[in-house]
Image (tube, rainbow, N blue to C red):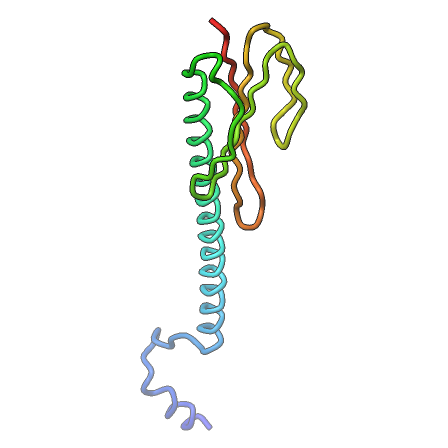
Length: 144
């Protein structure tokens, strides 16, 4: 019996036994789980970047309109829209103060108390992965 064991082990050098198939399979499984976790995080990051890009675009359009309307003469500041700009729909309402403006969509209710002032509410809406999204900006135009 000793001669059979010697025959199988005589070509092996000490410390060069290597890995068993089970150890290799476990290592590959752990590596695969790690790679899949990283891929999942990457998909979440891409979706987050897309949402941020859409929100930035909507904010840019709302800011553009909220700066443009107060620059007009007081009498020319009136409600308007909707205007389509790519994936965004821009609309705005103008209310003459004093008035109480109820909440609409995600725009909060506003109490406009300064007389001879127009309250401008700009809303930008878009659709993101099947969900309707919108932002709301408010500004006032005094009659000076």
